[in-house]
Image 1 (cartoon, rainbow, N blue to C red):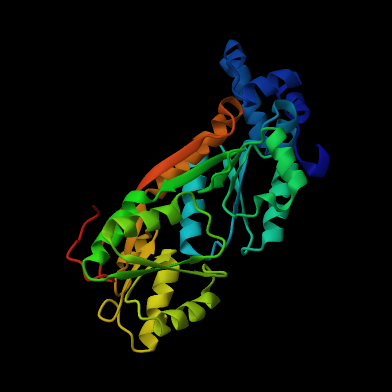
Image 2 (image 1 turned 135 degrees about the vertical axis):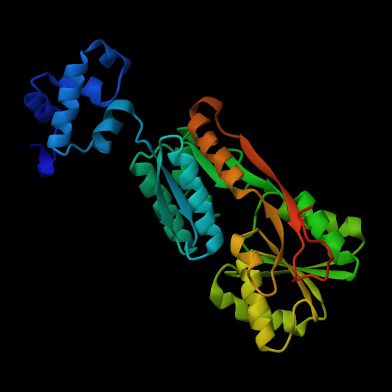
Length: 337
């Protein structure tokens, strides 16, 4: 037996009474294996089962230059949105024969870079990168860029790599048009680190087209539960009665906190979240939201990772957005438009 008691190709070859190259052909299902007799192939498989053979990914990486795995760096998997993002990434990768090593950072910028470097050092075949601190380590950034390492950023304008993004323009246009019928000022709550591709411009354009005033307010750590108290204090003190909140989970937490102060949604103010989750229709009130197809986005992201070495940086996977009006707004709409 090999290192750590694991069976090796040589062990299987001895038990099956063939050479190691034959074992490699059979277990890796190479076309040349079809030239062997059915009895020989079955003898190899039987020996592998008897020895409980598990292929070494390290050895496969050395041999092929590919690990068969992608990395994923996200902020906080306790947030249902990022759990959903990871779920669709894993499903899309596994459907194409890849696994995903998922790393959560808790939105710690230093950890974001450390995990990205760890994944690179482990020779994964590419990384889907949600956080926004990519340039925090200039040496790593230059290494990834110069080696054309497959890196897909989330909703950024990183031309040195590729990006998977949402076209927010239609979703914000529809949401603002709905609110504009009842409000002349609309608040937009987002994170100070928000740099999502075309999101800020989409909000501004939508408000300009609808003829309403946009009031922007950014907070540190908007995705964290502890930030909701600060947001609730701001909303209670303002004279704005309609808000679009980046992050639907944050929007739901905000609604719950406001109701503890006696403010009812949508009676006293209307709230729209960004991003749809299955659970949002079950909340009370059910949250109106700007929506997009996350599964389709991650399908495209995985395809970009697979094709990256041929297509190169600068590629963009883009999905459109829409709007679902539910009970957190005083709209009569019931279906996505």
